[in-house]
Length: 306
Ligand code: RUB
Image (cartoon, rainbow, N blue to C red):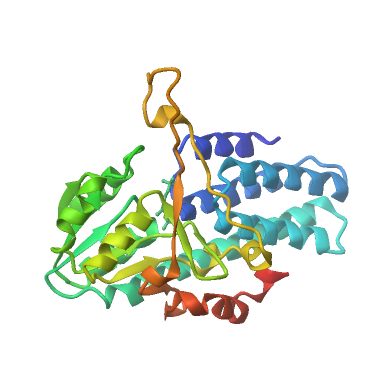
């Protein structure tokens, strides 16, 4: 396997690259580098290299449909093309990757502009984990001159909330940091909850960092609006045809390094928030109801269902 692919898979597994969007971007760039440096003599060999890389990325983090949608699109473009010249096929990879990345960037900008309008002056926003789509939205709101505070949950066991908190402080937003279990304690002070997504199912349920569904329940109890901020391409088409979204279970050592041997430690990375708890999905098409997400996908990205 190419060095770029191997290294990126390793970094993704270790969470050095974190968050669905960053994971997808890193995987796309590694496949682009593979294509750029390929020495495959035939189309068949080149496709084999691409499929091997795709499989390695798919298993690096199993709950990442954005990455899967991107790599499937890129590899399909090569497989379906009549061209046999490997250099020309590699150019197709470069082009498809570039287009996908540009589209992702554009979506993130649109989402930030749309979502920033939901932020009222002097409001308090709670967020869980680190989502670059959420922090981009908050940065946009700040650029627009909105004044708001952010509460970050620490996000056990890997503490991605620290990253969110640092980013907010860097842009001059008043930020508080709380342990995950304090979410209910503070919820009455919160005006809006914004979380990211790793996967969106055909029923409009959202999979995000473990603890998200607890925050959603707590928000519902105190009638605090709970929004998911996500690119539509985190939709997983396989859920349409009956598959459940796989929930990654990570090493127990992330939870307790030197735990007693006989202790069973479970460490799911994500959980499912039912659509009934989600006020809306802030995406590149606007703010959509989780109930209509499949319809929106059919209209905007029909190729996902191919
Ligand atoms: C990160 C996480 C994020 C989503 C969305 O989990 O759950 O909320 O991935 O992030 P992990 P983004 O740290 O385990 O990857 O908006 O950046 O795609």
